[in-house]
Amino acid sequence: MARKSIWKELPIELKIISILAYVAAVFMIILGVLFAFSIFRENELVNGTIGVILFLGGGIFLGFAVYYLQKGKNWARSTMIFLFAALAILSFVVFDRIYSGISPSNDRGVMILSFVGLVFCIAFFLYLLANKKIKEMFS
Image 1: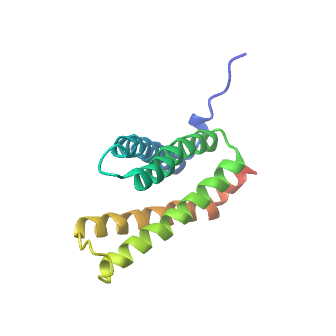
Image 2 (image 1 turned 135 degrees about the vertical axis):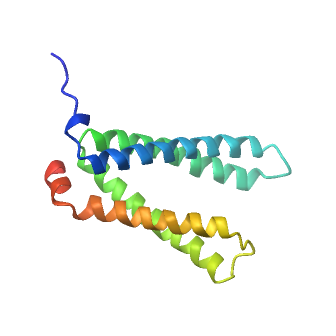
Image 3 (image 1 turned 90 degrees about the vertical axis):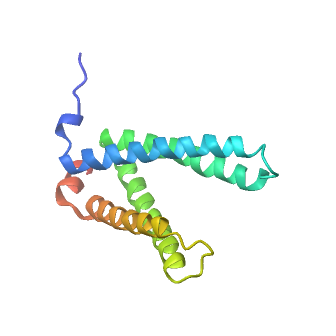
């Protein structure tokens, strides 16, 4: 018996979120690998190890969560809601530290990127949390 593909049944918004989350997961895995190579350079053992754990582990976890989100698992929806909320808070903190001058890096590119990330994370968070069609799909 052939398995029915749920991809065709997903709302377009959820497909967009899934694709963007997969892209983010790939970038996180790449950053994790880069941090793994930085461990052996200039006594970066602590920072490199934390980066490997956060980015490599987070990227793999995000990939699995998105995969099961597409399968209609409610735990994956809850996990994605939590991740988007956490990333929104992190983006706000980075944006605020640069905007207020607390951070030694006054890089406008990072500030703009963190603001865009904040907007997207809040939008995805609210969509997964409050959209009636999504709630019915995962109930």
